Length: 411
Image (cartoon, rainbow, N blue to C red; front, side, top):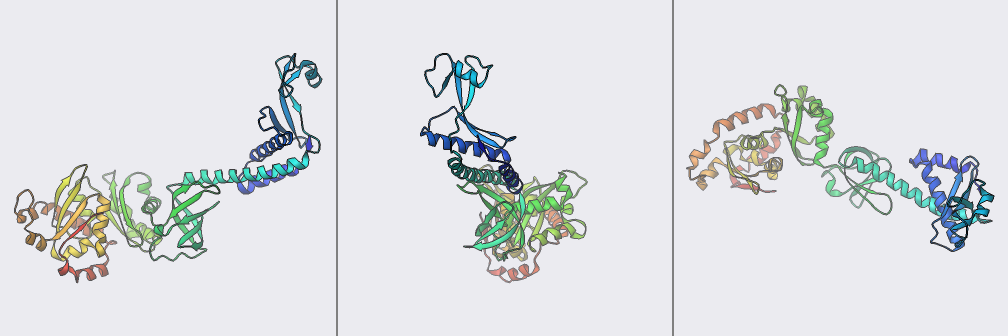
């Protein structure tokens, strides 16, 4: 047996405190290293009856071979005679197994060198598995980290036991990421690598908005209000569709909060990103009208509604076309992502020029098809959406209204 002392156990306890690697992992690694060193010493790799045993009471470790007790020994490496076995244990019988110490003399230096390599490797593997398991559980959730540096347009964020990578496409356009600042990120993916796992995080993912609403709106956390869909262009605008499971609870009002307190907290967290809270509806006409808010809608015609295609034709007043489309098509693009419907928007004058017909009806009749329903929905939206309208955007877009012939937005 080789005397180790208490230093090993003290080092194990320190590793467990600092890195969360259990003492059993270190002891197991040491025993495996002893076995590997012994096999190398006797120049036999295919040996299955060898093990190392550590006595924690005495602080000693040794290599032992398990042999079968037989009458006639045919394989000395695997068998032992009953007479020799009785010298080790008086109560041993035939067909029993006995452990015989085979630790070579002056084996300490060889074992120590081998143990150092194996233990170092096992510690790295254990640390890697700890990080991998921890962040596999965190995948798809929000976490808080500290910005470390920017490398090749990638932002390196420390999120605990490892550094995560935020690729450029997962960053908010125009955002300055200063080292040392705290940041809330979404754990997008965890990739296994030969060394520590590579964690990919995002600051632009739409699920960040979901998590923030769940944190700020108790009705969402309790399941009274449900988030049906989210579409986001990070740094600019987000649309979120909500529905209430309780007829006495207003889904939009719950998300806005008293005097806008809840929505303002979320907007502040997102660096003043604009947020449209949309009331979800099973009625596609109503849902599309809500999604295109704050624009006023004249009519919505459903052109296709099946598993292959969902298309709608929307007519708006001439003075609402720019608002409905949004700057660079942003409003209708977000509405498309939110609802899953392909939306073609025309002004009334454009539709008249095209002599647009549906179901072989004159265009004038189509304008009135959902007029009462649409006007009622639009009026409700104008009362609710105080936080979604950007007056500067509206003014700049209306100047270009006359040059806008038609817009069709596809994802």
